[in-house]
Length: 455
Ligand SMILES: Nc1ncnc2c1ncn2[C@@H]1O[C@H](COP(=O)(O)OP(=O)(O)OP(=O)(O)O)[C@@H](O)[C@H]1O
Ligand SMILES: [Mg+2]
Image 1: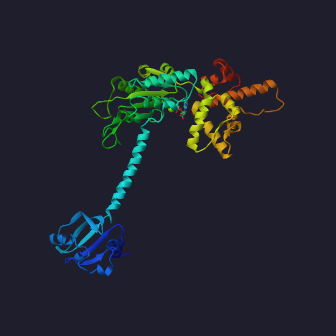
Image 2: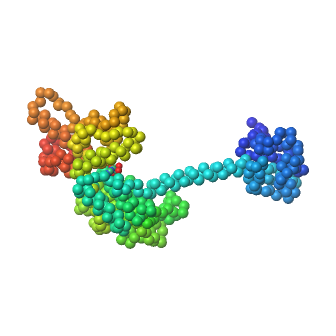
């Protein structure tokens, strides 16, 4: 490969560059194919011709006489706009010619590039906005059960008190996040950000920087210019501290100070910033028990617990299963692009018998699975067949057909206890609740059947 040839090819064939070389008298010695195409002239009317004949407005002569480059001027060829530059070529200290080129053959290419970048930027902006906005409203929170309706009405009232801190407790999947969104959206804070922080997902050493931000150089790896924390970003709006029960004791102390003073200080910084943020905290842990075990600060608990919403488990509001099911089928139809019309009475009955340890999220997942099954067989109404997987929990086979009734019953009992323990992640209290027996008899049976209980 000869460098000279490569350069020659680059110069003449580079489709992104209109370029030409003239000698010190302004005679065109060479021109790139792109430029020739733009001029729409045959080669013999270009090469060896005075540049003035080809492009009367040329700046080449200025460069040839001054010996100074002209960079980045507007250049028009046959109504097409370009950004061009012309630089002198020197030999032994004398100007022997000039090299003229445009980086973008057409300024509109640059414009298109900028427009594409802008639309991409706007897409990311929207995405960030959607991350920072609360999606759900009170209309999305379905339920007619008496106590549930009271909690919902209470939450609607709290929305009107934008400075009140709220603690939402309840088992997994009971709608804690949903209600936090709705409170934010119905308050005067709605036009500001709603920011969720999952205290369990962020490693303890990063949580402080995440919540309060940091200044440049606060620690090794700190970004240039520093970074605002979620409290600063949520200013005016709401911060949702999810899984607050997982927060370390030292972070709890720092959070308490912020709640008391309404002031944050970035890590490595020394100017406190006043913030106006409503805090909504949620957990599925029993914080009072954690206080007894010295795992949660009592003073922080009282600070958060100004208003307490306790989301009931689905087991305690089984009468809501039909209306929730209808609502979720509609929601899932939209998401899955399916057209399931409803559910049979028998299937609804089956859903009513199931204990739903994962609450509404589990119901939603079960319906999603059933809808997909029904859709695959083109059935419009969900029926018991589509929920067969729920039955597996208590489905078991007799070890031997000639068993006595007593030993078969005991075996069944043991099986049910083990399955429920597994489902509740070995939570003894929940297991007793699902099985509707008291704790002492559950412990007795665990000992009797020699069931291994995880620590
Ligand atoms: N009352 C309700 N009406 C309609 N949908 C609900 C209701 N409660 C919960 N859901 C739905 O159930 C799912 C779980 O709700 P959400 O995420 O709010 O639960 P969570 O209590 O925060 O659970 P976790 O503790 O596991 O985080 C969501 O898809 C939500 O939309
Ligand atoms: Mg949640």
